[in-house]
Amino acid sequence: MNLFVDVTNSCRSPRNTGMQRMTRRLFAELEQRMSVTPICWNRLGHFYHRLGDRESVYLRTPFQGYDRAVALPEFRGEKFPGELRRLLRRRPVDLSAELSGGDVFLAPDFFADSRRQKLPEIIRKNGMRAVAIFHDAAMERLGLHARRSTQKFRDYLQALAFFNRVLCISQQSRNDLLSFWREYGIRDLPETFVESWPLEFDEVERGSTDMASKSQSVFCVSTFVPRKNHLALLDAAENVWSNGLAFELKLVGAWAGNWPVLRKIRALRAKGRSLAWLKHVDDQTLHALYRECAFTVYPSLMEGFGLPIAESLWHGKPCVCGGNGALGEVARGGGCLIVDQTSVDALAEGIKTLLLDGPLYSRLSAEARARKFRSWSDYVDKFLAHLNARSNNAARVPISH
Image (cartoon, rainbow, N blue to C red):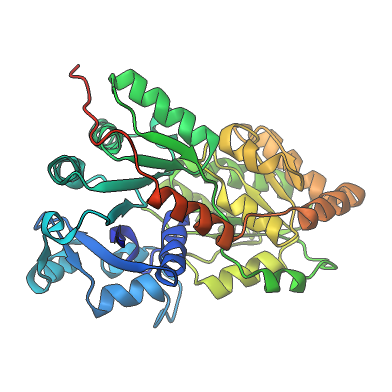
């Protein structure tokens, strides 16, 4: 069996948000166990192609040559010039001809381009086994998509119905997917399963976390998109600073063109607040920031999983976060101070509490250190079982509205 993996969002630039982090690690793990062919979709030519040297580097070592953090990592290869270069230099791959009866196609990430139409055609025509990983419908559920983006997302969800299996990263994401499929009138649903993400840090590193840190540094890692709720976090931090508490807030994440957040950061820094935006950092820097902080805040309104919460707990650091949906699935196992993240006052009170309440901080730190997380070996074992399983249904047909 050969596995063809669509790594489009993880091979064109060093952008390394949660979906890219997991895709890259999953590819690396699978490559050690089986024959894997990574492929990339070209948005201009509307075709798959094999990876060239540059794409292979971004897939396997995204921060090679990454000499400084940047605000917009996607501009290092995802935009028009990079697509045009790949269009001219890469030869199309015909999946219909490439895949044999025992091969599998994997889509581990969201796709909003012409793959929404092309992949159902390929799957239906070829009868190939196809597996997808579904992350979340948070933007759609929160009503934050523009009209055009909403249609693209709905087309994507309908395209997923043509796959044989869809692996959801949380119970919340599975519930949302099934709910949307019912709304769209999809019949002959694919088999859906919940397979939560493991953590990518090596277990041998966990014991080196500085448990005795007296740091007054509060850390938040997240791309600056509206649902991550940075404006509320910054208002909450200002509330705490205004009440005389001294701490440093460090933000890590790509800018994503969010001008209101950038203006707020600049305004707070102009007031002399201890606030640093470190932009899109490499993995080594990210790991160090988790280790050095006192605790983290993750104010996201809704998630498919909540990877920064799990990473914080893995490092033995308490996390102030919401408890709704998938956030609660991760947070309720201990180590988190669950608050109403839609409330600036509640976020401020959470930060203040962990800065001042030593016994609570110690208890949550101990709970965080005691948390057990899924290993990559376990995840890949289960993943391979999904790849080898055969569905009784070969194609999915959405009912016309």
